[in-house]
Image (tube, rainbow, N blue to C red; front, side):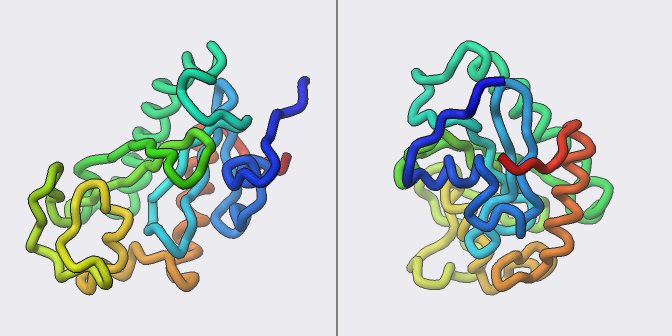
Length: 192
């Protein structure tokens, strides 16, 4: 087995190696084709907010190997199905209505996707520039939530406490989710 290729100073590579507090969030789950999935930072996200990323350092789609490229769509499908199944079993009163998967790579030069579930209890988010008014103003943002700002939903005054992960809240639920995903996806948390 060849060694993984990492870039010094890259947060994504540190996560791939099991650093950046990923153990506190249930570890990483290896996926086919050299991809991994982990629960996103507890302070910035909410329960079920995942990151799907390449295990090795890649900065853009054009750098993916054939194996990585071929596995991407299948991995996205598997992660979404597993997340939806977990949610249906654990939050039947609040099913996931939509799962957003987006890649920006603006601040982190390591190819990754933000995986955001949107349960029924979240407001229907605007997909363009129209602000939603169902939620209270997001602290410090001066306006409503937009689809691409769903990660800020946990800062809304009306955000459900059962999904908040900042400050260590619901850590056991994060670990329970990750354990379920590991089982469903056929992986185990690994340390590189």
